[in-house]
Length: 362
Figure: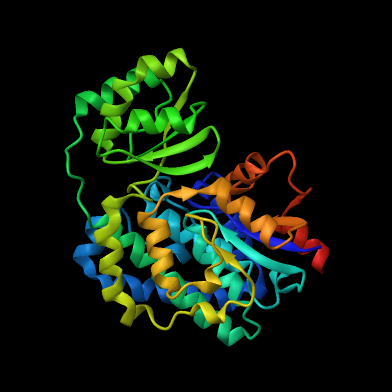
């Protein structure tokens, strides 16, 4: 069956992420991969220096120690830690001896930060040394992109009174953040509402009625309270996400620019001519094999540009003639959004997890 590998974004930062990482780490066949991961993370911490590390990472990034003993309960609330863990988990499935090496894989698609795992998948590295080198540079790119994003300060200080007021009304205990998901509101209505709040933007259109806003935490709280009555009347669900920076917004454009200065440390990255199968963009119906710069595509599509998932998923499945979607996780978000976006008249597509696919490939 013609198979597309699908990678979730930071929505994969959930209760099962640590369990999945520990399970992968426990397998002897993954030893070389995790050795590379731990070495890269040590190098990244040395490269950014103690001042930057202390400013943007709330706890020491000791992934090896965490996997072998206790994972700090609050660590994954920081998008640097969460993004690194998501990427490490995804790329582990792409080793030359893993299920993704099957020749039925004809395309890859990644939601948000999952785009970089899709690029790694698209290279289809067949030699272990080639794969580990690519995994190392890819992890450096992801890590430094997240670090540079966190070095940008919010333009407005969040009022503690406003936060307390929100938590008292919401009742779910999720602390306000720079991103919020809305379910049950049309894109037209949300876009019209956003036009009156210039510093808030629609950053992800995940399905016809599931969208995400990005902005400073203060601006998102202002937006929420300005439209609270409308949300209640129309039964629109609002939930702040656990992300600690506003991905997919122009506010992170300076961070994307700054990562270009880190490319000497990041090392060689594949060009579009290295992609052996189509890897699809998420901002428009595009095959990245026609791109001029895959690093810039990652920076723009993850940090700056909004996601158009209905267009991206529909185009990928139709363009590559996909019969099966293998969900490489680590969360279910990308799979769920893809199902919701497929039109009733679309070709039938089978969905299965990477674990199911792996068992079948053995």
